[in-house]
Length: 584
Image 1 (cartoon, rainbow, N blue to C red):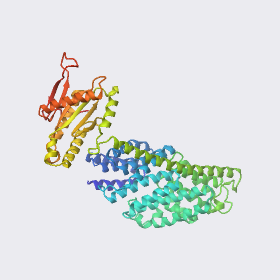
Image 2: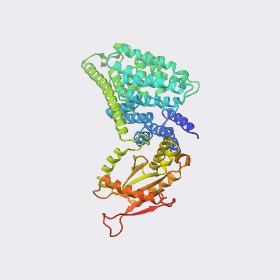
Image 3: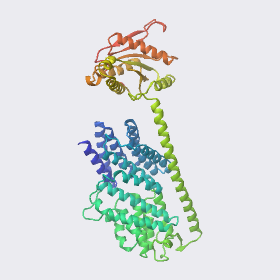
Image 4: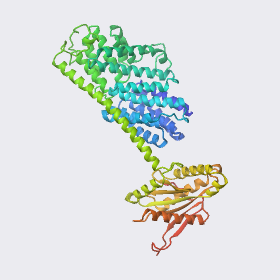
């Protein structure tokens, strides 16, 4: 299985899991977990991140499994930060927003989307190593995941901006599946937007949204036939996808749509798709003089999805539709006052079959307040988005101040801060401190060039960093010297770890290292010892390693009966097979 095959298969499974029954969904999740394990064995960062996304997303769309997505999203965030994968890190924040919507934490979800969009605002330059098409696809995917949350929250103006950016990202390279996905997503948004506009009495605008959605539903037919979505051959897309049928019905409610909508309502699909189809069916039934059936249909869907939080705005649309029909319990509906329909008069809330009344006035006032809150949500999103962007910019500047530009390791300033912190933390004791110097580095600069010397420093820095634990610190001290801090490590364990580093550098191909090796001086921080004192002792130990031929670790120890004012003894290891045990 090539990496490309794994990614392609993951895309197919994600398309399938969103329109499958529960048994098939669980099977897809198991398959994606196996593919994730394979990707993690291969270790290619982008592949791992995309499989983490697929495994998390499959759980988000499977009823009852959303909370299982959280550890995978946490892992995806940590992984993408570690490897500098901005687009996929943004996507992880967007999916966390989706999880928070399901948990009813709408304000926290908005914050996650602000973080995701701030990252995308700064990630304007494509990564040439990924390739333009792959970059565009990842950008579009992250934007769509942001759009889904904004659409769920009913923040349609912001959602429109985001989905337009997603379309622009892939307009030159989009295949049939991407085109189908874009059109269906826009239709969902327009229908939700239209229903929301009706709730504040803007019926002409709502009708325009419905008509635009209907024209798009017709345009979906051709690309849908070649998409990755599960489909039945020879059957029109409008007979297979609920939101497409709902778009035609909401644009022009009539009895002609009833049978199709009833059939689609009985199939598996997204909860909010069921709600849209239900509202469209209820309007067609009402238009046909069958208000009691319309009310029963609305109540059935309302009770079926009573615990679903994935679409708060759409749930209010469903409840508003029941109020519009003037009923509170199924089976008690009267006849439509004017023959049904969705015009301005028909869209108003009625009480006991009669327009107006105090309840209608109260509902109208509440809707106006909710509309103001929606506008406040947009302002909040923009404010948080700018705050996140500025915070990231400040963080980048701070990071640069603490980072060595050549090797990417922490610099001396960062080392001083970390050493000061660890020295004052009881849980970090014992604290091993090592000074690492390169043997033969001057010859590289003299015989080759400083550019070659810089390459050697980068390779050695990476090798040294990889040889130690994740919470150990390796910093560039200056020139060809490095400092390693190993919190919680006694000298014996630190010696084993640094021995692996010495062996790893010695084993590097000559064209990478030009034969340089490491001399390491290792000491343990003493109580109340200042930073310059412990570094001085590590420096003295390092020179002992140099005098003994280099390519080894020398550690300072106190002999029996000595006091701390006497010169220390040094122990050195030179056997290249030493310290092969795991360092944990």
